[in-house]
Length: 91
Image 1 (cartoon, one colour):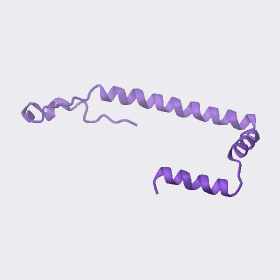
Image 2: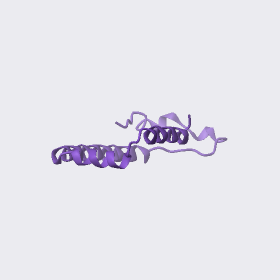
Image 3: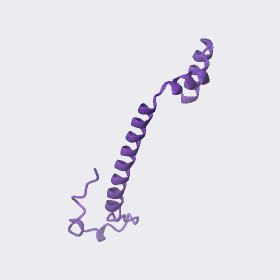
Image 4: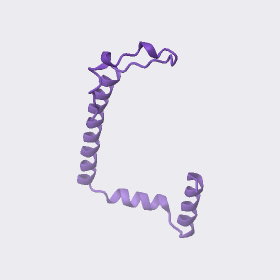
């Protein structure tokens, strides 16, 4: 079942049961307390900060990667030249 047919299936089930999805969503969003929203916002900020930290580490490692696009020129590659990047890891 593709994503389009999956969405159509869910729509048919929801409408067949007489559910008003917009009304249900509005009721459930209104039921969320200020404290719950604050906790969600704190969590999102923490995740964003972690992603930014990882991105800086990733870009630092990526700057040291050299890609040789010329496949016929394998003789120029020397393993000893890349010792400092062989231990690089991204958390």
